View (cartoon, rainbow, N blue to C red):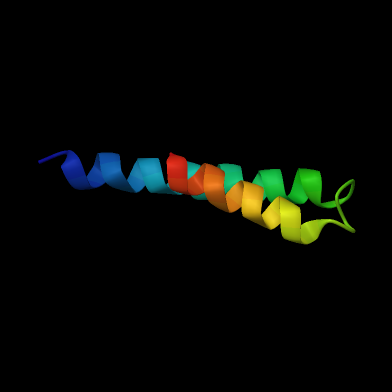
Length: 47
């Protein structure tokens, strides 16, 4: 059944997107990393 494959692709793309967003937004928000961490955590939890 294709369900595990779809779940794997969904999780993998979400992890890759959050990792790249962390790398991109880490430089301008270096001093407010707690706020950035909360925002990204909430976005990940919502999706």
